[in-house]
Length: 186
Image (cartoon, one colour):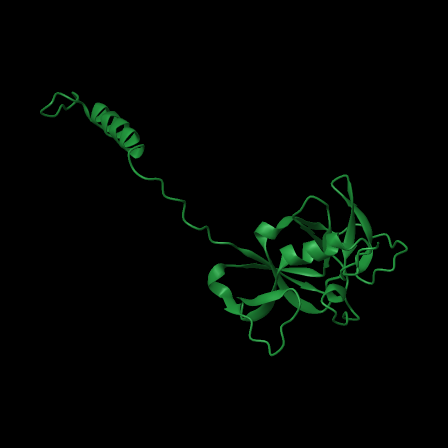
């Protein structure tokens, strides 16, 4: 079949190339617009008897828990240390950080590694799935809970949304890992 030409003598491929070229050139004349906000997914999980969620952007990884070796520490929040991807990192109890009693039948199966320059992991019991931004509900607690910003609904269950940046800040700011601020010594 012979190639069809338009009134200017251009073949379809040439027309398409000319259009792309013009579109590219004109893009420099238009003002820059920032990209649309991306929707953020949340990892929903259980930890020490509670249902929690964390923004995926606040986690550097999630992995099966290996051996967690207890270490001498005054920190009630520190479960021990583990090796994950050739890095030694502390593993913290979410129940202790939230100052809630842990469940008796809680078994650490997963680790959620918080994003930051120093490795730190939270101990998780099980993974429940992913929540999306449409499933977020504002926290409606009478007293504000530490590190909880909202709730996420997944399969008709509610998960407390963690402020992972604040959790990480508290964990790494306090050398003992107790979650309390240290007074400067003079």
